[in-house]
Amino acid sequence: MNEHELATMRHEYGLENLRVESFASDPFTQFSDWFTIAIENRVEEPNAMVLATTDSEGRARARTVLLKSVDARGFCFFTNQHSQKGRDLAANPHGSIVFPWYHLERQVVAWGEVEPTSDSESDEYFQLRPEEARIGAWASAQSEEVASREVLVEAFASYAERFSDGEIPRPDHWGGYRLIPTEVEFWQGGQHRLHDRLVYRRITSADRWRIVRLAP
Image (tube, rainbow, N blue to C red; front, side):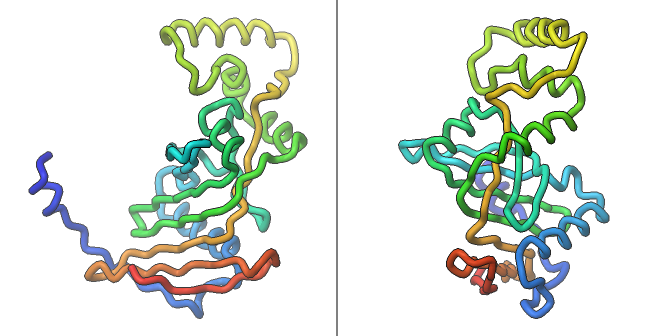
């Protein structure tokens, strides 16, 4: 695709406009409302979110992960903590997430500090995963170079045999993270590129928020 083709690609936004007075008093309630709408409208994998992190030298990386829980504490996901994202968060425990709900002309963006979940939270979620996914957590040294897919398959088979007679424990290097937002933006596409951007900003350290409108 050449520059002209990219430059002339157009999408006319404008399904609806956002009004501050119709928004909830906190971003988590508002997110739950939008998430329910995404499910009802059959958005594919509505809990898929792009997670951006930076390493100790400020180099940014982004990848898609899955939201596994959200409450007044923040947005939670799980991963191998020895992975690149885990190393990034150990060096700089801050991140940003984006939920790209294109079908609804919406996105939700959050920024904030990221902290590990408790061992009990990680244990509880790990045991909810399918057996194959629990074995895979042991078999894959996430983000490390691997000689071939056959090596991964053999590692999986080896751990499947190891745990064939009992419970599959959570590896020490596998667990959850929670993004504790200081800002959460709700974005709605608008006509003539006059998109609506309503942002919740945390008031100091209290569980209180103010909503501001940003220019698109």
